[in-house]
Length: 264
Image 1 (tube, rainbow, N blue to C red):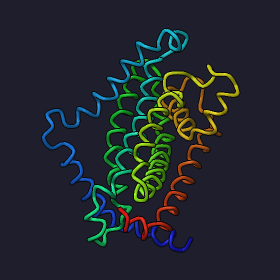
Image 2 (cartoon, rainbow, N blue to C red):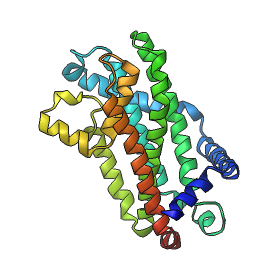
Image 3 (cartoon, rainbow, N blue to C red):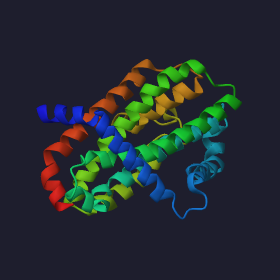
Image 4 (cartoon, helix red, strand yellow):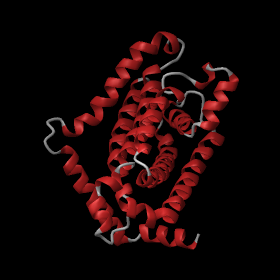
């Protein structure tokens, strides 16, 4: 536990954040190089999925729901961020194997830098969600006070999962393939295009308690749509999940770091 506290303190030093920001800047240049659309892909991909799901499911789930497009776009944006971020981070130590073994830069900085890129794109998508909510008359400035801690918690949750997956990937290449399959499953096991209360109580409880994305998704919708008020219990449960997964993921990473980096 002492080593965990020491590493956490090191993350939040000014020098380390300068390193993280520099890694993020370099990654941005690499991702957008030789791309005609560049940042526009951040909008094109989720909007394409939105259009497919909207026309496929609006007659089944959207007829009796006000602002179903907002409901759907929030779901797509949240899950897309998690899947994209985890897909990037799971391979980070393999991609940067040379840097891993020949630098004193904390290895977790590479995970954080990759997550910042997908978080940047996620914030663009959230902005679109708020514009759509404004169109439907659902926008509430006061809700922004609740949004910031939730975004931070969601980033912490994603980082925790990324640290676990990237560590496991160092020991087995199969983790990447398994996670690809699980990511596709999440598109249906998370209430993206359907409300949780449309399911049977038993199935709804399974999706809520066994899929940690669900509480986050409900909180983002409560804040953005603001139609039935916000569930404070669910909101703080989401914040708790973010802290819990980050601490657990960081602990797994630190305790296995030496062996994992040798196998990266």
